Image (cartoon, rainbow, N blue to C red; front, side, top):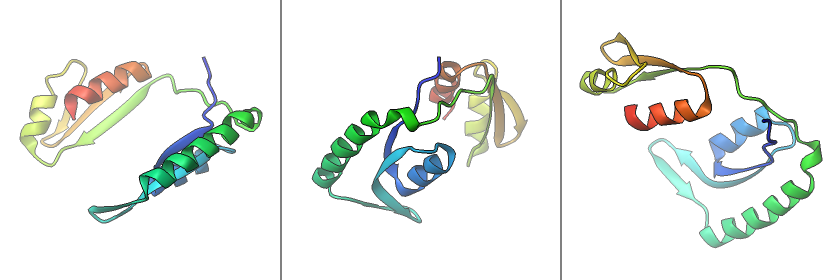
Length: 120
């Protein structure tokens, strides 16, 4: 089933990336990353902006494109430590590419999320 994505709130990078992929998507930037730091906006201000932007997004949803999921998700993860990659390689369907990199293919979003939960 295709469900339109009309709203996203998160950091500046994810909001910009999502808007480049989904025409008409409304976003609220809650934080901005800088190196290893994050600069967070006032939570009360963000809550008010989210409430108003979501209201507008739902009202204007007819102009938002529907995006489908791909048939398969191929994911590669490169770990900082080889021991982490080794341990994660035992999860069903995960293959080791080298000492620090694993790959797996998921047939759907649920399988992708479940695998990520156990290998990260």
